[in-house]
Amino acid sequence: MTCLFTKIFGERNTGATYLGKLIEKNFATDNLRGEFGVDRRVLRLVLQTYKPKERAFHNNRLQNEYHERILYSDFGWKHAAPPIDVIRAAPHAQSTLFILLTKHPVHFLTSLHARPENPMLSDQDISFEKFLTSEWPIATRDNLGDVALDNPIELWNRKMHEYLRVMEVAENVIHIRYEDILSGFEAQMDRIADYIPKITAGYGNIRRSVKAKDNMRFEDYQRRYKYHKLKTDHKKRDLEYIYRKVDTDLMDALGYREVM
Image (tube, rainbow, N blue to C red):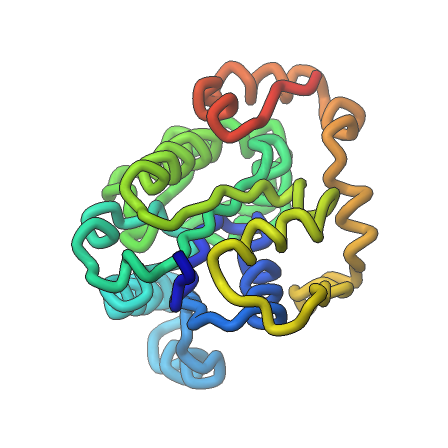
């Protein structure tokens, strides 16, 4: 079925913004962004009306409210656990291609440690080892309830479990590993083209990082996210801890394996 809409779900630092820009560059589709769409200048001025110590709280509150605003039109925040009941009930779900974008859990945790993007974290300058055992606060827009998670590994487990549920309920859905875009760009774009129309015969990539502070190119990411580097870039005890805590059934279902 050719879809009118496209919805990307991808956790923080999994390439969701990059893939969204690829979709807009190469395909004819209504991309349901699921991003915090308020002008940053407006947000900054609104937050300045609060006392400095209150701004993190209100920043988080406003982002939660924006998620609620777009929940039934765009299926909510792109980093959220997908809203299964909304996907089941929304009339436009049957005309939507759902793309579930994932990273190997170790790659994901490494990226999350470097860039947590969580306004509720009180201490973001900690070692990777401590990060793995620290509580992870969640927001309403995470769609995982209101209780903080024991650690960020549980964030991967919980959200990937909901991704598998999308595969069961959505009519048009594909799972793409971020690492596969880097190693087989054309093949992954072809998979998307089975659901939404291409604009031109070929595909145009985005060669530079979509994150303003990064001075990296596509080739730099290709070198960074090779599976064999997992055992050279991380301490063995950290890898062992991650693999003890991560849901191995989820890893198998998503096509990942332990690399030690």
